[in-house]
Image 1 (spheres, rainbow, N blue to C red):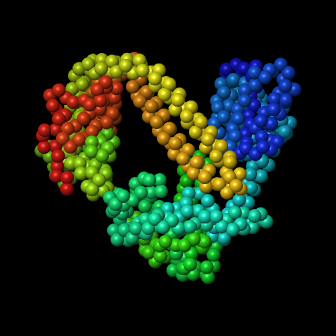
Image 2 (cartoon, rainbow, N blue to C red):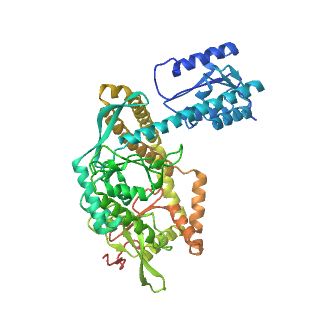
Image 3 (spheres, rainbow, N blue to C red):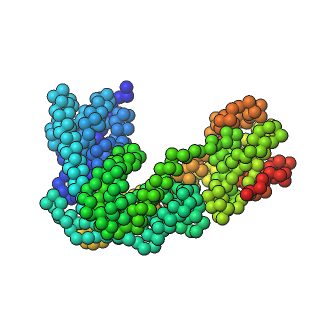
Length: 571
């Protein structure tokens, strides 16, 4: 066990959101410092480590500064941990008990200022566990009260917030009273252009009875989502199954009753004047992906908004989707194709996937082609790249690597030359990474500030402006994260150690001898050790190797130049 640093004491503070009340993070820290100086007069200001999490719930311990604190605790960087109140650590009994157990294992004392407990005594540990039980009980009571309020709000048919469905916007209505408190009420209001898109999606699905064909139609006719992206089958299905578009009439009422779905509006409300509002459609758990609940668990009410799709058509779509699910069958993917996930269409940049044919080659193996995904989705409208013979193409790339295997030192020398050039430019890489990290940090602060200002913005009637700014910053955040990830990836992928050079050279030396005896998965892994991507331009094959100083690698004897009948009819 490492020796504990007796000169350091840690303070942890947390607040769900900024309020300016007396229990702000600043006040918590000052009170903790006062406690430390009383109990440990030898400790100086510079000996105190401060960890702050503002804007995070106490429901779990997935907070950046909390995790950093526990990392340093494990490394024995401090001898005691001080917090203002127990619930600043967590409102969950399990999390709190785990913390106390971990600190005990690390030999670190825990002190709570407000409750005046510390873990130096058995009584202190017992009392803290009792208090944490009541903290969790309070949290669960609050959660139950929130759920009850949600049920009451469902009866009003109001829009409860979140991302508005395509075809609608959120519109403020009169204030209403809930639990004796005045609440601002919102409803959905139709956006005509988007509503026409929704109508078209339902119309085309009823015409084609196919998500794929509907996707193709939208792609070829320039339809875009709210975020300006192409519609996918997943997005289309989400729209088709959303009852928010359905007119609330007698047909809709009977449908939900037959499905044994809980209705919070009586039959007289289903008069065809408004549309359906569905609540409790998803199950959200901390640190887990959102799950869609079964339709039987939904809470259905008549909303305040107008419907876009008739109940008859909406129900017909659900029946078709259920039929399609019951008879759905996916053909097994080709087990032979080696370049799946590596081969890219030189025309549009989409991946090319293997497509088996009924023909056989001279060896008796089934022939497979590589088909551009965009070409398939758009039915050749967006891309018309010809389909190369997959058996021949795979063999060409394998032979190229076998050629390198015959003279691995030349390739390794090229790698070392490229590595030297990269190392010479390493400082520029580091500076750019630091710049992006700083910009991302500033952007995160801007997003946090916007969220904190939402209550005040709502009072001033400028909430929509703040939400627009949040959306803009979120989009910028995504872009910065992608740039940073790519820069780090490029930097790391080209930064090989001397040991890695040796391993790579050994793999290359044995490649030609061992490759043919490998099973299909081992062959794919072996190829991906050297090949970064392969581009088919309709006539030539371009192989990009990891770390190569020349991106475009072509065989000296023209082996990778497709002058043989590589292409099959692309119909």
